Amino acid sequence: MAALVVILAIGTGLAGGYRINLTPSEPLGVWRIVPLHRPVAVNDLVFICPPATAEMREARARGYFRSGSCPGGVAPLIKTVIAVGGQNVEIGVRVSVDGWRVSSSSLALRDGKGRPLTPFPSGIVPPGYVFLHSAFPGSYDSRYFGPVPISGILGLAQEVFTYVP
Image (cartoon, rainbow, N blue to C red; front, side, top):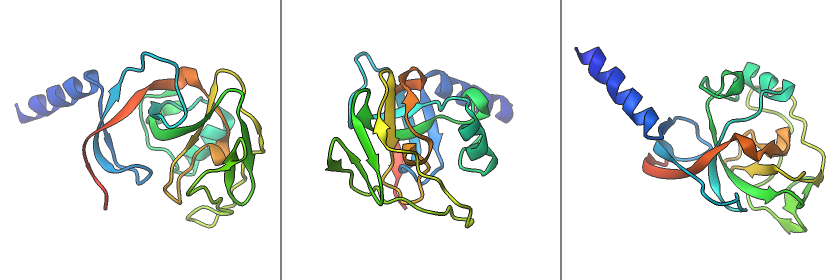
């Protein structure tokens, strides 16, 4: 009976757009996916399914992504949109968008296990794509995997009950 109650609670939460974040890229805890009824904009904090590309499969193999319901078997990411189609992203020691430096955007040359990380080349974000960022120093985001299609956006990320360790 207890197992049935837990299964029903989880199912209801997922159907209502609630998710639990266990990654340090954003505060730990309960989040909600809020439908986005307008074009995505810079500074939107979004839930997004990364595309099932070779780079994402490599990231999954390295353990950067948790298991979930997105293509490629990964969980949705919570990231901030820092550039949209048509904006110029420059990646060097730090990231800048249209000449403005993005705070907390230093690049790492290696991941936490000492494996090399390759930054994405600089360039213009294509139409229909967004460039994602997290201020967490160890975040795996568009600095490394590049722009992702807006079609993967599930909605805005809204904190419900979170904790910053």
